[in-house]
Image (cartoon, rainbow, N blue to C red; front, side, top):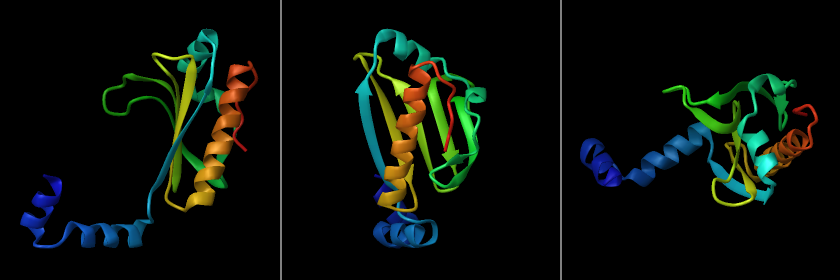
Length: 136
């Protein structure tokens, strides 16, 4: 439906519009990883707070925002989201399994995405072992 709406309103192929956007802003790459977590660790992860993140860098970029609540309605996201200019990660416990999940996106390529995921895993592991959370 969206593609049809784009075509109807602009008279252009949606693929052409997408290529223009990616040439201007970069192509988005996304991945998700998961790891085992006890119920206690899942509870800790769900209660993380922004002040626990003391460093200002992630994958070589300055952290712009650290969220634990949705900006639109203030609802808890049940975890943590860290945003930089060209990428982000969110970490949250699974609601049904003894695992946690890390979601990440990069606009700078596969290497940048891998680096975000690696650093995010270190941050979560530090939180689950009771240490201070540090971004590289």
